Amino acid sequence: MADLYIIAGVPGVGKTTIGSLAARLMHTKFIDIPEFVKSERLYVEYDRSSRSYIVDLRALSAALSSAIRDEAKPPIVATHIAFKPRNCKVLRVLVLRKNPLSLLATLRSRGYPLRKVAANVAAELMDEQYVEFIRKFGRSRVIQLDVTQLKRHKAARKAARLLSKGGRGDAVDWVYLLEKNNKLGRLLSFLSKYC
Ligand SMILES: Nc1ncnc2c1ncn2[C@@H]1O[C@H](COP(=O)(O)OP(=O)(O)OP(=O)(O)O)[C@@H](O)[C@H]1O
Ligand SMILES: [Mg+2]
View 1 (cartoon, rainbow, N blue to C red):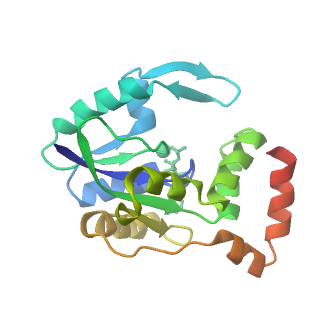
View 2: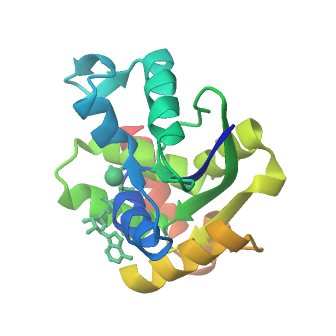
């Protein structure tokens, strides 16, 4: 069975940036799912309102599985969709986390519609990716890394170590942290306006 590592996290958290650097450090291939879906045409349609591709999950699973089987070493696959490529074994999942206020700034600077910004920030606030990937792959294989304060190369070094060796990773509780810093109320009122 072919093995792989997954880097997960909501859009804008740094999967492409950190995942590609970590793959270089681990001397393995990096497969970015949004790029892969586009280049292999694994989508059903393009949804203009959310400005995203609707992925054909069955076709993606098959195509990815054959790309993974071609590799000598387990590649790193970056995705925000919790799915398992057919006949492949996920060794570990690293969920990148970013303070919702930083994420908000990143997504706004991308020019995303505010509804899309809010949906992703709410998902980060509520640990959605962490919960989803645990549901799919089990708690023992899912680790978190808070990249909010990390420069990209340092984040990549930590990511490479956690993926290859495992470890405790970071505990994340944004609601507690934002409340402590008196910033939760303002964020929630932004979210309630657009969610
Ligand atoms: N550690 C970091 N420090 C500062 N900026 C970063 C860091 N990591 C990523 N960035 C910046 O944050 C933005 C989002 O990063 P990136 O595109 O890698 O996220 P992503 O998770 O791949 O998003 P998507 O799911 O939409 O593909 C980019 O502008 C990137 O340059
Ligand atoms: Mg990306």
